[in-house]
Image (cartoon, rainbow, N blue to C red; front, side, top):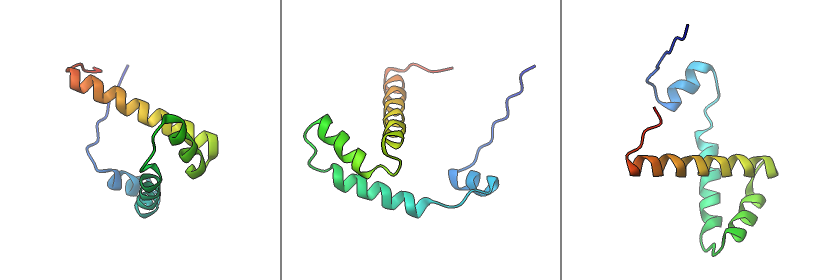
Length: 86
């Protein structure tokens, strides 16, 4: 038997419901710092070097960030081409 439950809520509502702390300010600061560091990047190697220096968890954090970006690019290309994951 398979049961699917779909909950429509914002990320903030989900964090609150699950008892997780609000990290939006820390996330904004982190994203701002990465954005500033990435300005003027001329090559993928240089971008990786900056990301490694800024990543709070070193290589693990960098790998998670790479997976996140790659997943977003895949989802964006599927959406642009009209394909669906369902």
